Amino acid sequence: MENGDLLKVYIKVDKERIVDIKFQVAGCPKTMKRKSNKKPSKEGGKLMKVGVSSNGRYLDSMLDPRMGRCDYFLIVDSESKEFQVVDNSAANASGGAGIKAAQTLLDSGVEAVITGNVGPNAWEILQAAGIKVYKSVSTTVESAIKAFNEGTLEVIEAAGPAHGGLRMG
Amino acid sequence: MIISVLSGKGGTGKTLISVNLAAVLDNVQYLDCDVEEPNGFIFLKPQLRGKEAVKVKNPIVDIEKCLACGQCVKACQFNSLALVKEKVIIFSKLCHSCGACLLVCPAQAITEIDREIGFVEEGTMGDLACYQGKLQVGEPMAIPIIKQLKTKINGQRNVILDCPPGSSCSVVNSIEGSDYCILVTEPTPFGFHDLQIAVSLVRKMGIPFGVIINKNQLGSNIILNYCQKEEIQILGAIPFSKEIARIYSEGKLLANHGHYWNRYFRDLAHQVGEVIGHETVSCN
Image (tube, rainbow over all chains, first blue to last red; front, side, top):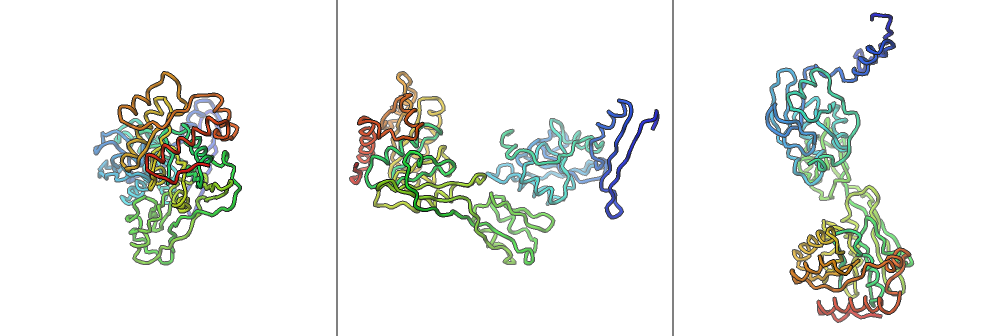
């Protein structure tokens, strides 16, 4: 640290693994700003199988902000960009679409999900499965993955409104 | 004779018509099937006699026996089950109690338990028998309550069914088995739009019906023109009146306010009785 800025780093260790890391800064506005930008998770950048809700079957398809009611999930290897397409059979379900979609994602072995909104039921499933959810809207699947790799995607930390997909669709 | 009162659009006057009909007829059972927000008892003021719980069956999983095979999740047509990390998660509010998960489980790990979702209540006012169902706040499924409520129907009596608004499952279940439907509407674009949906519903179900135009104003012929074109019987009109609104807002029966309105609802009952050729429609 230059200019006499003060930096305090906190780490939380569980069974010899770092499970959480935080830091506090006191210093010039520039430094402070860097701190507030630092919100994104460190998981981004790690090699992962990521499920992305999508309007289409390709990497340049638009990301669909609706998780339960999107047409497809693209299951993308975050590093090699290799992907497979999974139809979202929940898209036309009369009820419980989020639950079914979350189950589809789980069964395809994803470790993280990128979408716009996750309702309370789907949230319960993804939480129980320990799958992290990242928020992204109005972008292509490819650039969402890029942002994920760069660690700039916001982590979704609570369930959004129920039936969000029905309102948007 | 079973008469159902429905509307399509909410707030057009189903309860106004239902409670006043119930009040002028003889040998009546009044059933408030609007179980999300029953309000007929406010007007009929019955003396409450009894209350019974409405319960639905929901699955529970014995973790000791469960093989985490996921058969139950696949079998569930309502997406109320999920398999996460070899554990079944149950979303009870989506469960339709069909029992498919029990049938497919190879390990007999699933059993059913009762879950209370509301109640059915009954009371009397003179010789008028009143029933209402009430769904607990936060519960999404009204059908089990409506079904239990309808077990109270006595075929020997005149039955007035005060239906929920809309034209979805809860309305279909309410009007099923009715001899006649009264469609209450108002001369607004919303009233008209939802009336058309209600008309296609009762036509599909093959139940004879007629229309009452509530909050009627001279010059607004939107409902009138439609009914004439479609050859739908208009049973009557009730004017858009501050006086009626006042009586209603005080929780009073219009039929008790002067001869005109008492006569009006008796005539309405006679009209319906004539259409379906029923002779037991008599008034007190």
